[in-house]
Amino acid sequence: MINGLDVGGTERAVEETAVCLAGRGHAVRVLALKPLGRTGRRLGGRGIDVASLEMDDVVGFSSLVAAARRLGALVRRDPPDVVHAFLPRANIVSRLGNRLAARRVAHVSSERSTDFRRSSRVRRLNRLTARWTDLVLAVSPLVRDVLVARDRLPARKIAVLENGIDLAAVDAVPKADLRGGIPGFRPDRPVLCSVGRFVPEKGFVHLVRAFARMATRAEAQLLLVGEGPEEGAVRDIVRAERLEDSVHLPGFRADVLGVLKAADVYVLSSVEEGSPMAVLEAMACGLPSVATDVSGVRELVGDGGPDPAALVVPPAVDWSAAILGRNGTPSSESERIATMAAAMDRLVVDRPLREQVARAARRRVEAHYTLDRIVERLEGHYASVRHG
Image (cartoon, rainbow, N blue to C red; front, side, top):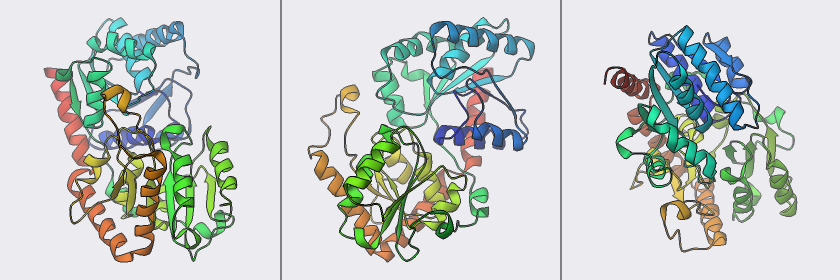
């Protein structure tokens, strides 16, 4: 169960997990609270039973209760072995619905982001309903720590389960031809790429500013793939920095893996994450990354050393300080953006370093984050809540 099934890292993770579970012999049903979007339609095309409760974006307490009652009726009519919910709204609704069902079934919640701007109302509901879940799966250790410190969830009820990726499916995707579909694209220039929703937490405004400060800016180009409410603000900065010829915003692309394979460097500029699926996809594609040091990134790429799987830089702003009591990085926002720009420059000019980071990234995915490995651990959690 998930809030919605349009586009995003969590939606992608749910899709791949559902398909993998079905391939391993489980009967899988996926239920979205909001109307089905692109991921939901694709899931149906891949043979997964998918449906929606058709909730609106704006949610009141009465609509939450109504959705919980509908879910309770579904659970009574055809009880599953496990209800597994992703993201706060689905976590809360599914706990209530399971509670209302005549036959309560095992319940697992997934928390996918540190969500530092989570409202006090949602925090209270999360804390109050957490007693009705058997296990909370946090996508990274920092997400777990935030749930304990901010939402006051008991640490004994939380386990960490990272994202996984299907390497065979990744390898089967051809490289995209970017020359025809992106106006102004220059095939002779290295491509720095980032993918995600245009929202503040993804930090695209900071990424454009970092690109503007690159020493190699005239020899490179930046590709920002996605859509969202902050797109206008990003375009304003592109115009203000006079980067129209070298920063491309092609909107939504269905062939994200192909785009990653056509790029030279991936850049994660987020100021908040859980564990970034886009970085995992870039690593699986053998694409070297510059990534901000936000939740899940250090665990994903490793501790660096002589053979780094990414160049890790501080985020432009630190959203974690208010929740976790950190002092944050002593440098200014401008200095952090300059650090990101310098790391981007390094990967643009140093081809041997790009190749080294790319190889290390792919090896790390193969060793720790294959989808079968992660889903096997998930099956173990399902067994524990069913029989524990």
